[in-house]
Amino acid sequence: MRFANLFKIALRALNNNKLRCFLTMLGIIIGVGSVITMLAIGQGSKNSIKAQISEMGSNMIMIHPGTGQRGGVRQSADDMQTLKIEDYETLRDNAKYLTAVSPQVSSSGQFINGNNNYPSSVSGITPDYLNIRMLKVSEGAMFTDQDVATAAKVCVLGQTVVDNLFPNGENPIGKVVRFNKIPFTVIGVLEKKGTNSMGQDQDDVVLAPFTTVMKRVLAIDYLQSLFASAIDENLSEEATDEITQLLRTNHKLKDGADNDFNIRSQQELSEMMSSTSDMMTVLLACIAGISLLVGGIGIMNIMYVSVTERTREIGLRMAIGAKGRDILAQFLIESVIISITGGVIGVIIGGIATWLVTLIARWPVEIQVSAVILAFSVCTVTGVFFGWYPAQKAANLNPIDALRYE
Image (cartoon, rainbow, N blue to C red; front, top):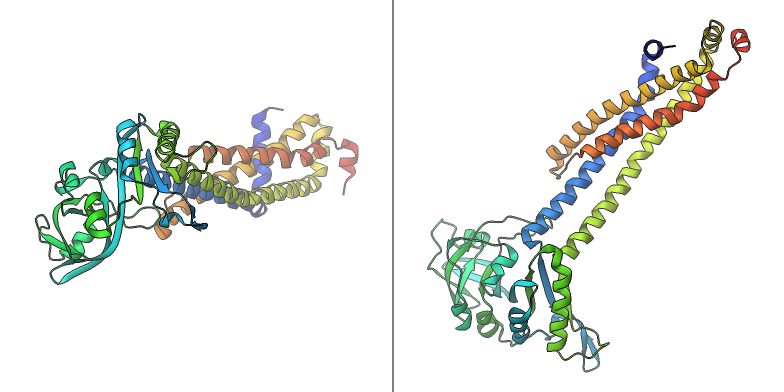
């Protein structure tokens, strides 16, 4: 029997039981729609995290003091003073895998401009910090290496600080703002960056020469951290190893001794976040995929009912020449039509659900072509797998017994 005829017979049989056919599809529809939506949410979150990390500098490396003991008491990293200006100079002059290095010291306090004030923090850095963090000056200029050398009282403001200290829209360039009674002349304004994936305002920042913050604000002779930029994101591991070796030599650490500093790269952070996101996506997809299993069981159940109801019809077709493989193909086609049609509707439902998630929850989502292909593949396999046994049972019926069936 030709495939076209079998297809018409299968469509006619399904058309005679529209409601039952739709209810059978429902499990597949819900399953496919859920899987596509969950995968879209997971992929969208992953891409959003990568974009945010890339905005901060995908090849950025952060060096912080490590934990250690002082007087027999274990100290936290914040209390350690293991990073010195000499470490910065060593990395700047000798590191081959780094394009830029900047110290970082910071202090929180109140910024005041006339009658306006705003609580924020000032970060002491070098001009290379802009390249490391991918920041740009939109107005005015960045302070120079000469300003760093002379510990000049100049600063560059983020847009959030500007909006709060200069609410009337006046130009902040050249104005003097006070931080803990210390005057700073504003020489530039950073380009607006908005909030990151953690909800942190990236424009709530004030940059000044690190020497100024160390001497005039904090009165310290050590660095709180170092920021560096690897030549390329793929060379972050080599750069980390090089930094480790240079700092261990500087700190005169013996072989086998623990590092008194910690190094973290954006690549490491990106891989960790991506791994967590992938794991959550797979978990959500597996939970949603349970609906596909339930839908498949529903198809098997309905096909069993259909075989039982049409036993006499099967016997009659066999009696007039239909072969077992024709009966098998007929019921398999019905099963696959149910699953694939449910899959198509499920993809549409999944697309609508994804759009609603974007519209209502404002979550980043991205439907992948691979997710749609996977949905159709699973639907086809589900139709064949769960439809095979009932179809095989129909194909193996004895024509005489089938004709006698009541």
